[in-house]
Structures are given as structure tokens and as C-alpha cells.
Length: 358
Image 1 (cartoon, helix red, strand yellow):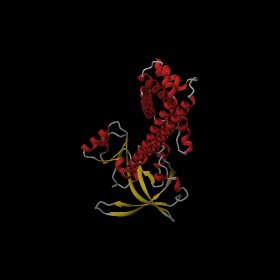
Image 2 (tube, helix red, strand yellow):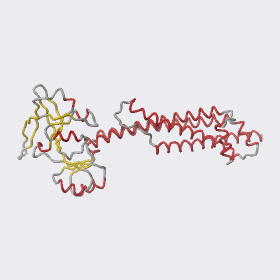
Image 3 (tube, rainbow, N blue to C red):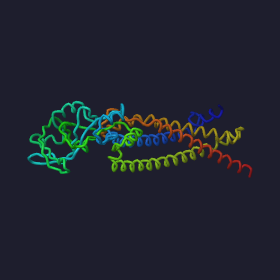
Image 4 (tube, rainbow, N blue to C red):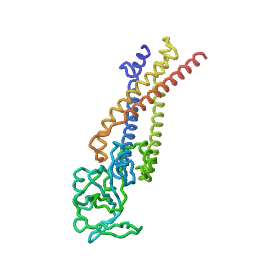
């Protein structure tokens, strides 16, 4: 209890003549903690939201190519799944043509479309608003249809546009895909069963049962690898930032202890052991660092609340810091601070003793 009282006095007590230095150290830790948490939260959100949107809209968690729909459903159990078909084609008008992917769906589809859009697709085609002024009347779908004897014939189909759709992926997906009723799909086009939810056991079961399956990581392998490289770059950047914070903690401890030489000598002369002196100032450093980290975490809530507006992110709720990561960083910073303050205090005391004995 005596050590805690001494540590508190030398950290922020009004009788402490170096209190301004403690406040500056705490503010420095607050800014470092804030920068680290906000950077991690924003970068992690941008990556995870992209992955989530891909899995919900374009390349689903698990896709099974099979006509045995009921058998596959029996294997996946209560896991949400739906059927669809897909093929490349051309949208053609009197003046232009556009390469697209056609996705044939029914009312069971759970691929990021609003329910109102699903009702419209039963009567015609859903296209992106990007085509609103380009494709209105006399739209034709041109595609290669596979014949029964391994031949491919060019077919043309007139389309009626019933509505427009938007998805989370925006123009990257919406400008490439159109939706049509499953009943309009070519008869020999393979059925695909999308299974939602990352379940490695389910994946293994389907493979053992002899079904051809594709995960979203396999379907988006080039993008997934690019994002993994981006994640490693983020880890390197954050490691460098953490090293900078370590240097800051080391510098803070040195300046703090240098300013407290007189108090350290006074405590030792009053009978406090070398170990207790070092522990007192280690606790002082831990208090200062803890205050800075706490303020940084609290301030990060406020900053992240305005990040979606500043970055024009289409979010309905504000971002929030990762409390587990923030807590781990804070505990690590506090322990390192205490260690640095402890070592530097003992070094000063040993130096003083050597000079005294000489």
C-alpha cells in the first residue's frame, strides 16, 4: 500500500513538481493508442466487409454443382441453401451490345437481392441502374446453347426489363450481372446449389459424398490472395507503428526517471530499499501509461463514429474499436512501461551507490 501511495504521488499528485511531464507522457500514449486502434479498425473493416459482400452476393461460401438437389439438402441439413444457374451472354440493342453474366434464380434465392426485386424477377429481367438509359426497349439476350450431341448453337431471346437492382458490391458486380427467372434457363445449363455458412465439416461431407464443390476462396482466388498480401502489409505497418510506440515508451521512461533523480535519492536516503524505490517508480510509469491508453480507447470510439462520414462509407452504424486488441495492446504497453521504469530506476540507484562508495 505504501508503494502505491508513493507511485500515485510521483505520477499525478498536485505536489509533484514534474506533473506536467507526466501529463505530456500520458497524452503521447493517448495519441499512439488512438492512432493504432483507429488504423486497425478501419483497415480490418474495409477488408472484412469486402469479403462479407463477396460471400453474400457473388461467390457464396460453398457452391455444389449437382442436379441432385434433395440429396444435397439432406446432407447440409438446416444450413441455408438455394439453387441458381449461371452463364455468360450478350445484351444486345439496336445500337450497342454488352457482355454480361446471366444468373437464373427463383424465389428461394438469398444472394443479396431485396425481396421486392425477387418478386419482379419472376416476370422478366432485372438489370443494373447503370443500363437504365441504354437498355429500355428491344433488348435481346444472345448466348451459346449446348446441344445434345456436344454442339453449341447461337440463340437469341427477347427480354422484358421488369426492374433494377443494387447490391453491396456496387458497380463491380451490378454492371456485369443480370437476373432472370430460373424457368427461362437453358435446359442443359448445370444447376448450382449455394450453401451459406463457412463449415469445414460440411465441405468435407460433400466431397466424401462425391460432389464437386467450390469454396468462395477458390472462386475468388486472385482477389483473396491479393487481400492476404494486403493483410500482411497491414501487419508490417502496424508492427512498425508498435515499434515506434516502444521507442516512445523507452524515451518517456528515461525522461521521467531523469527528472525524478532527486526524489529517487530522497526515498533511498529515507530508508526505502533499492527494490522498493524501483517498484514505486515502475508503478508511477504504469499509472501514466494506463491513463494514456484508457483515454486513447475512449477517444477512438468518438473518432470511429465519424469515420464512415469522412470516408463516405455506406454504413448504417458507426465503427467500433476491437476491445480485445485494444486491451491486449494496453496491457502490453503498461507492462513494458513498468519494466522500463523499473530498470532505469535501478540503474540510477546503482550508479549513485557506486559514486557514493567511491
